[in-house]
Length: 92
Image (cartoon, rainbow, N blue to C red; front, side, top):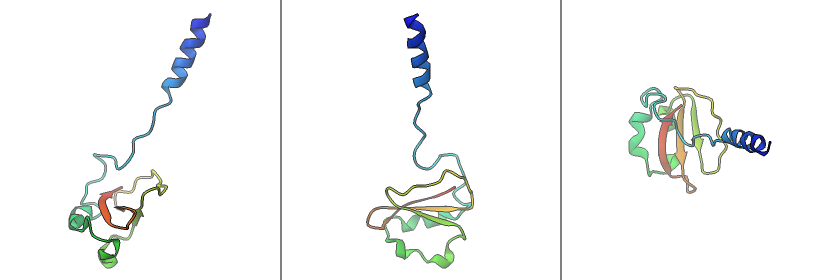
């Protein structure tokens, strides 16, 4: 009888798996939102980006920001560090 409880607990804990963090590889093509052409801005301050050349949908992500998991291949995601320096770009 005790084995039933142990197996039930083990199966219940098996469902507790953490979701993946960061951009999903194999998602949107890096050209679909313009991320491929912006690689030279990595390490630059956020203000170095001329907003007139950015796509209509841009999301700036700083450490600790809550980010939705909805997927939009045309959205440019710009990751920043605490000093507002650009650390990366990805579409999604």
